[in-house]
Amino acid sequence: MKNRIITFFLSLGTLIMLSFTPSETKDPLTLYAQIDRSSDSNTLTSAEKKKGWNLLFDGKTTSGWHGFNYKGFPDCWVIEEGAFTTTTKSGHEDQDIITNKKYRNFALSVDFKLKKGTNSGIIFQAVEDPKYKFPYETGPEFQIIDQDNWPDPLENWQICGANYAMYPPKSLPSKAIGEWNSLLLVVNGNHVSQIINGVVVVEYVKYSDEWTKLRNSGKWKDFPDYGKWEEGYISLQNHGTQIWCKNIKIKEF
Image (tube, rainbow, N blue to C red):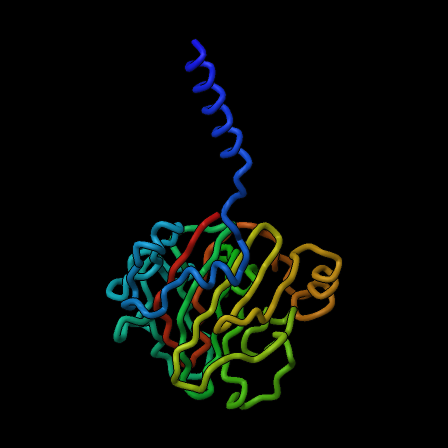
């Protein structure tokens, strides 16, 4: 009986300890460090799988993606050497691609490189509906651009790493044109963090007083549905210039 009592209390103690074990961190820099950037492209290491990461792009097929308000996959996007890339040369906005699935709380890791003068972005919490022409009408954008070679003057909230038309980047850690960069977007409830090459460039709290003021006083005052949703599609933007994206990985919370 004595041994049974001891065993019972040991088991109870283990359960109590487990119940108070802190949940896995959602710290952006810790999440950024979980990605093995020395591994083969468009693959998951055993450590990444163990941490809950999944591939959104296998480097070979368009599975899991489609054109915004489009049933199939648009031909202005192709797969080139294991990366999604745009083919449009017109300099005008064209078909964006979006995930087949909606996401709410997540960390998204993407490797990207730019051609001279490229303008693009990653949009999230986007709504797909024929009444919208582009995903950015509803979803916030992680801006990606070669601001040094963009032909028009830019506001600070338009340069690479910005939360487009809202928050300018705190630093500019992007690499030279033609080199691969790594970004991480973390959406944890209303807390959003944006990282480029291991540096946090933007942090904000959605629906905060500051966010609401920016949303209602700038470009988005003319877009009544911008930022209204907490769940939506993830989009790669085609702004008529060329970007390459690979190693697209996501971890849901």
